[in-house]
Amino acid sequence: MTDYKTLFGKKIKFQTSDLTMSTATEGELFYSDTNKEFKVGVNINAWASGENMNTARRSARGGAGTLTAGLAMAGKTNTAVTQATEEYDGTDWSTGENMGTQRYLGGSAGPAPQTAALYASGYAPGGVSAATEEYDGTDWSNGGNVNTARQSIGSTGTQTAGLVAGGNPGPDYSTSVEEYDGSSWTNVTVLPSKRSYLGGFGIQTAAVFAGGSTQGPSAPNTTNTGFEYDGTNWTTTPNMPTAARDAAGAGVQTSGMIYAGAPTKTRAMSWDGSAWANLPNLATDTSERMGAGTSSAAFAAGGDPAPSTTAATEEYSGTVTLKTITDS
Amino acid sequence: MALFMYGVAANTGKGFFTAEDRRNFFLRGYSGHDGSNYVDCWVIGYNEKGALWLAEKSGTEKTKSELQALVKASDDIARTAWDNNNVDGESADNKVSRIGEKPGFTTIP
Image (tube, rainbow over all chains, first blue to last red; front, side, top):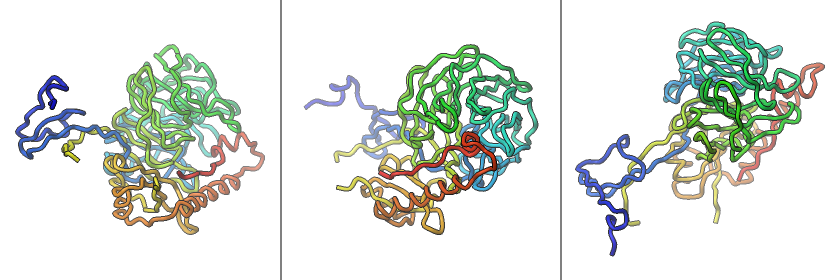
């Protein structure tokens, strides 16, 4: 009969006490003398329910921050366009200061921290808006207007280095790209093709935008193609496994994710800088969500068309859990 | 052998379903409407842990056709709301720009 050392070339570690979940690594096998048991670290990547927001909303495209210091801004409730801001600490949503203007389908700087957020352009009651607002964790203040007012934008970056791409200024989709320096927006190299409802992540000089719609509003064509931006030029990425429109994004250019886009609303996909792969699915079949975070800890909040707009939140995390090895 | 069971249970937020639950059984949620209120509809992997989860969440088991009817009722409301949301003189393109595409119908697995 063979043994573990013969198969794998090393002995099983003998631990006088359990490893903790933070010190164990996936696949690490050890003998726990405390429990007299063999144990292994199992990595569980999954979406779990988070706390419900105070204001149910959709179409915000207004997520920022991290899973434990997140921000939700703007959007539509079942009855109105909202200015509401909420802050998430990984456990509860609390009310923040209202934005100065009611808007939805604008663009937030997803990687921006909860205390230095940005929301640009979008649809305000009456039409598209060029307004930019900046949040300092307490108050919203006006920033510089975008050059091309539009809605359904791809957006990422930070409050002092923001990036918006594509969108719909009406009547047609746009290729326009603008960079923000904390006070004004500058037109830069345009997208390779017209596109709206892009999902995005990364920073101003290393960003990814993927998915979205490639045709006009009444005949949208959801795509699985994507682009990378290096601060100067755009290049195409390999295609995502699934087309996604109005998806949320999280992470950085070398480790990001796109998730909760229509029509396959539970789909989440990772990007490692060169290839896309499927991640575990979200649980709820909900579109028009907002999200932010990293590729290993992100949130998706709100969504769904009126009048069933939801306040529900899902949290994505990868954690190593210790499992006892049994003979059954 | 059935792959799924079906039920309704109010999503109470944090902890309602955990990463461990997601690993133990299939779970997918949909918006439904029972004629009076919106209800959270769930398609659940048909195993012991899935059944226990629904029971622990004070859920009510439904048949597939019952759950599909609840989901369709929610879809119908959303589609009617979309049809009725009009602005005088607005083009079809502008309507879609303003409120998005008309919601479709959902088919549960």
